[in-house]
Amino acid sequence: MESPSRSSSSDDYRYMQLAIEQAKLALETLEVPVGCVIVESGEVIATGRNRTTETRNATRHAEMEAIDDLLHRWQKNGLTPPQVAEKFSKCNLYVTCEPCIMCAGALSILGFNEVYFGCGNDKFGGCGSVLSLHSSSSQTPQSGSSQSPPKRGFKCTGGIMASEAVALFRSFYEQGNPNAPKPHRPVLHQLSQ
Image (cartoon, rainbow, N blue to C red; front, side, top):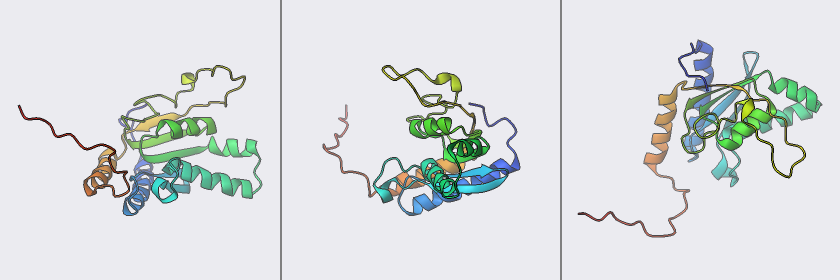
């Protein structure tokens, strides 16, 4: 993963601001505040926000929402799989939090050009925090599988508007999550010594 010290352009901040706006929409609907935009040739062509609670589907992360929107539109327009792959190879994705392992794997298989993210994801990050799925050399053959999906890898830059992304997470966790499951066991109080 490259550091944000590579001179991020004003466009990078503009696109990340749009991703932050998507994250705010997620926060307003009591979702974990992650948002993203997909850019092709300087134009935003898709947006996404977390919708896991709304859809009751744990895979509905911001990146997957935006990808599925594009796939639907491109297939509706009659693009062939090679044409879709070519289009993804020209796209950049801006997301407020480092893509999780699931999303980073999907971005790599789809062949995105570059991914920019805000804050790191120390628990589930797939772009350097836990695994480095953006690196084309990180693929290992699966045992018992004669064929694995093609893995292209992508450039990755983190830390763009990270403090704004972290502030949204703080707001989410400070307000409490009414959708969180109730604990199965009582919370143990720390014994005083």
